[in-house]
Amino acid sequence: MSDYSHILVTVDLTEECRTVAERAASLAKMYNAKLSCIHVIEPLSLAYGGDIPMDLSTIQEQIQDTAQSHLSEFSQSMGIASENQHLVFGRPEVEIHTLAEQMEVDLIVVGSHGRHGLALLLGSTANGVLHGAICDVLAVRVGNK
Ligand code: AMP
Image (cartoon, rainbow, N blue to C red; front, side, top):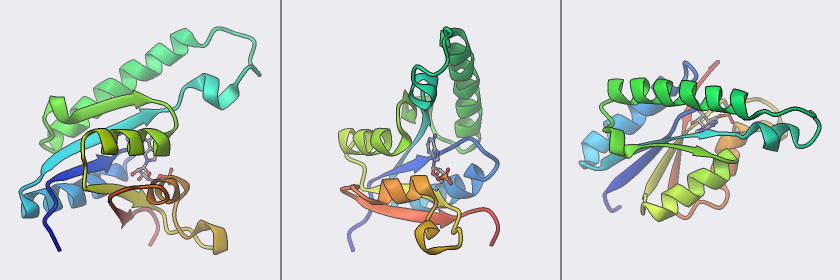
């Protein structure tokens, strides 16, 4: 197996993302690879469409500011340089694939809740990232074991 040279860790900014990022950081150290991170903000307009007849831009800006400061703080604590931190808008799996391709990432690290049931073997984002990825994907088990 060839070494990884660029690892992308996907962070949802919940308490669990530290477990996922720590695994990515230790792999980056082991392979002497570059480590980048991404957090995707789902635009409120995507979630609610035209259902809510009000201007959501102020709330969206507040969400962006909060996400930016949490991502910077979290990434710094993981030793990820600011130029390797990516905050983008859209659907998580789509944006994760796009950035991974643009940056020639060779490993994406994602959290997986290991939910029970036939359809829920992987968390939905983990499932989405796995399907269609053109590089390796590591699903790190998080949540209730
Ligand atoms: P979920 O499908 O929501 O259970 O999330 C599983 C994993 O997908 C998380 O642990 C993260 O690694 C990744 N993920 C979920 N949402 C996002 C997001 N908005 N931005 C980046 N990564 C995410």
